[in-house]
Image 1 (tube, rainbow, N blue to C red):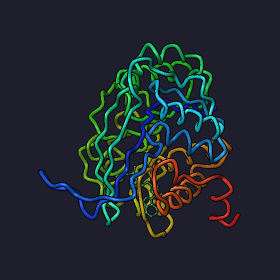
Image 2: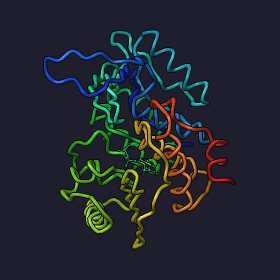
Image 3: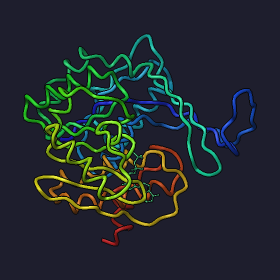
Image 4: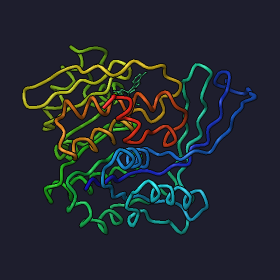
Amino acid sequence: QLVVLGSVNADHVLRVPHFPRPGETLRGHSYQVLPGGKGANQAVAAARLGADIGFIARIGDDAIGRQMRDGFAADGIEVSAVECDPSLPTGIAIIYVSDEGENSIGLSAEANGALTPEVVERHAALIQDADTLLLQLEVPLESVLRAATLAHQGGTRVVLNPAPAQPLPASLLAQVDLITPNQTEAELLTGVAVTDEASARAAAERFHAMGIGSVMITLGAQGVYWSEQGQAALIPGFRVTATDTTAAGDTFNGALLAERLRGASMAEAIRFAHAAAAISVTRFGAQSSIPTLAEVRVFLKE
Ligand code: ADP
């Protein structure tokens, strides 16, 4: 089983001709409230792509939270560890999407902020019985650290998608088996500006020096730079017309692990994850853009 621990957000999305300037009131269109949050997106991606998923998260005691939890269950996710907070709303994101397809996001953790180390502790057995634990950084850092420590002690492989970008303690990084930063996150954590294969290699070497065996730096439309045990390669993605890149990285992470757990090699899993992420960037929204296993197989003509 793959266990994902992370955030659940209701994404309030408004399309705008350009981002509003200070003091400006702008007419937007196509307002939607869509399921999001990096933890939820990655859990949904892995589940739609065929993995057996347990999800540890915290929603608010509100309609949108319950609706999203029902959605996770409908996607086949084990939701017994998706707890309802009695006093906080479900996490939210306020997202502007411009006509150029860029986004600008404000987040409020709300119930995600109450996913404390004590909550993590309650689900120690779920974490330690899993093959792999997948973490991101939209829940309290001390909880991420606790979960990684429990996993590490229990022989569960720890995968960290270090998003959103923030500095991390060496004690967390030392327990990570696979790290999957994008270019911004890789630069923040290593100090190396990642723009091409040579700079990606330099950043990966820094991660290895921190004790992380496998490094996968995602490079947007350029693909990924993968480095482990003396092997390294830049593996390009698929060429598609992007309409909304929200959750591209989340889809990539969920897909990569789903395919790995089926026994695929890392190179095969990267190709599969590139396909899933490429489909997701052609569609609008976070979870609404994540494809099913059948859709990825058709894309890959398998
Ligand atoms: P994040 O969304 O976390 O910033 P990236 O932008 O690096 O992550 O994208 C993650 C993955 O999504 C890429 O490795 C690639 O597989 C896919 N992807 C992202 N943008 C595009 C694009 N414009 N065209 C095709 N694939 C893309």
